Length: 304
Ligand code: NAD
Image (cartoon, rainbow, N blue to C red; front, top):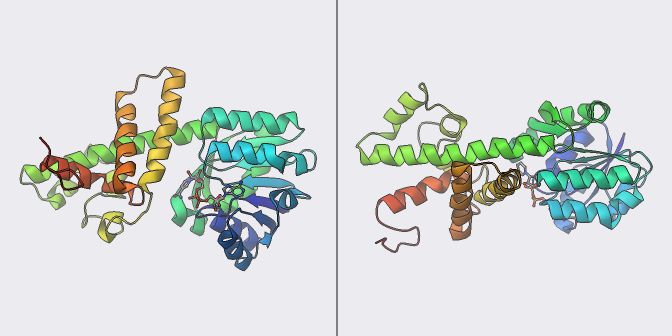
């Protein structure tokens, strides 16, 4: 099958590579030359323009930073360049409303469109073990599923258009809130004279158990593979958590959902990203909590 892949960055690059390895002809485009060169080395047929990549492809996959990028790319030539009935798969993490607008655009032009955001990070993209959350009609899901299974270990049909993004935003709101809760508990434990190991051994086998604790543990030691053991190199960057919680905030507001913790988590991670945490793993939020608890801000000034 010939597949156009638009957006060959940290996630899109390895995802496109896995499609090539599976035997598909992948025509790729990115606005950054270095991303194109990297893709070329992985067997992607690099195109001069997005439209050239899309021409003659049966499927168009986008993996772009934001909803604005996706809608602009669709409107600026992807849709017009596609053959009738092309299947558009957007795997970027974007607003539910933008996902539905994107699908409406492709359907109005005689194509098919689904949202299929992912979790699993760059490691999952490289290993082909991503989880895909899919918003699609049944027949479109059936057409996309074999391709998504190459790039992912789990493909879940969540409902109609937008449902994949809805699942993604809800999951990441749980993750943001739970990482803050786990981090606050570790700092409280430290203040109470508890070792991190003791709290981990109890909570990981008790009702405090969660992914933020047992896989991405924010203190070094208990989980040797967690980013805390490598000075909080991501992992899942604070900038992306801030972005995803911003999407959650939009969804909370547009649906009138009363979610005090989700709203607070969005503002906590926005501040964290703005004050130096953007490039750190999101579990480094524990350092801001510890600093505030010790009467210092992260910039070293003393709190009142
Ligand atoms: P990235 O910035 O590494 O890659 C995005 C790529 O899109 C860049 O190479 C950029 O040059 C390219 N691009 C931008 N505008 C373009 C255009 N008009 N045409 C062609 N290419 C264009 O970002 P990423 O980490 O690969 O993330 C992509 C999406 O996946 C985001 O929506 C992100 O939220 C989501 N996501 C990321 C992760 C992660 O761990 N990195 C995990 C899950 C989901």
